[in-house]
Length: 96
Image 1 (tube, rainbow, N blue to C red):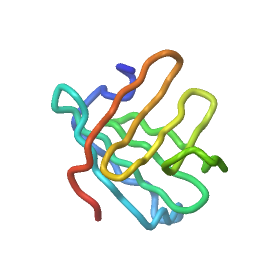
Image 2 (cartoon, helix red, strand yellow):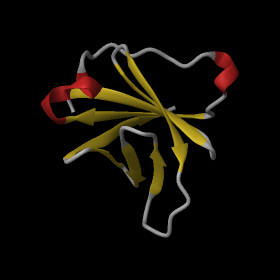
Image 3 (cartoon, rainbow, N blue to C red):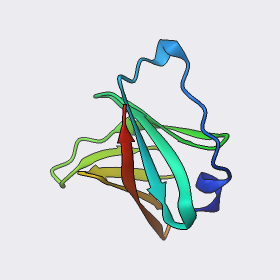
């Protein structure tokens, strides 16, 4: 999942997207990602890379968002990113 972790710098979403909840997570190798979300969609930000994901209706535990390339699962303070056969878990550091 190197594309997700290109840099430590983080951008924000445009004001019109109104995500409402912003959370920061620390991943392995001290890399950070930001998850901005609302009830319908989320934006995952890692450096200059941004991915928009849509809420998945699921009976599985956690909040699940997905797009064509990845699935993001938020369970408590753990953010799991799944892409193809790769899985990366990050821990919450801040909620704004």
